[in-house]
Amino acid sequence: MMKSIYCIGELLIDFVAEAQGNDLSKANTFTKKPGGAPANVACAISKLGGKSKFIGSVGLDPFGTFLLQVLKENNVDVSLAQRCKTFTTLAFVSLAKDGERDFVFSRGADKKLKYDSSAKRNFKGNMVHLGAATALLGGGLEEAYGRYFFDALTQDSFISFDPNYRADLWRDAEETFVKKCMPFIEKSQLCKFSLEEAQLLSGKEDLEACCDFLHDVGTQIITITLGGEGTLLSTKGMRKTIPSIPVSPLDTTGAGDAFIGCLLYQISALDNPSRVLDDFEILTKMIEKANVAGAITTTGFGAIPSLPSYKEVFG
Image 1: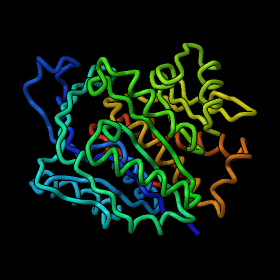
Image 2 (image 1 turned 90 degrees about the vertical axis):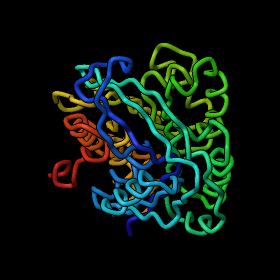
Image 3 (image 1 turned 90 degrees about the horizontal axis):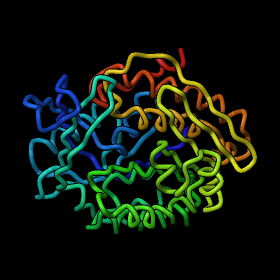
């Protein structure tokens, strides 16, 4: 029976400066897109046919209404989502010609999330994905995030963690970010990092050294996404770089979320998700498909609208 995956964190509006280059100061025209890493992951899972549930907060404004409607249209369960009087969180995104991004955030309702104890009983036997782009910046969200993490641990859930590092949010506070991530890396079975995140969190440059350090902290499965080069998969016993497929990227927003969403979807279909902890071959095959999902997502503008279907990934 397919497991439910609870995705916890921010849901926001991406205002994308399409075809404006990567300098936000020169951007004039922005297009509204739904975003937020955990919400992207939830949609990636559901679009593939999985069971995803989103926990986060948006404002009592038209943007909040729009975002929740998008999740519903993508078959994400939003029964645990909250709304508050604070305006919905916004991100302004510029794109370079190669699809790479620059961000400026305007935080709002995401930080107002309140812990809901009713979620705990549903975690048992299911999976919890924690995306940390804004979750470790204080406010109600950080408190609720930590409590949901503890609930997932006590309910023996399969836990996935993605630090979603955004330099604009942690300027001159990188050490704080690293310190706050460590408990999640220690206890999560699966951690997904970008190359920048793996190097920042480990304090190492060499990928082998990054993995050794992060495994020593505690996580059992490490995936490091390397863009067009594929993904480095590392367990405490084996390590391999799994190639991606060639594409011409337009917008890399959401590629990592599509990757981890596809990986979690596949794990959720197992009778026992923890089975992947000891089966490198199964993980390798799963990541081959997850790489495809991530690559396809870069070929369109905006994260959620560009997420692939089951047929596109699995044929």
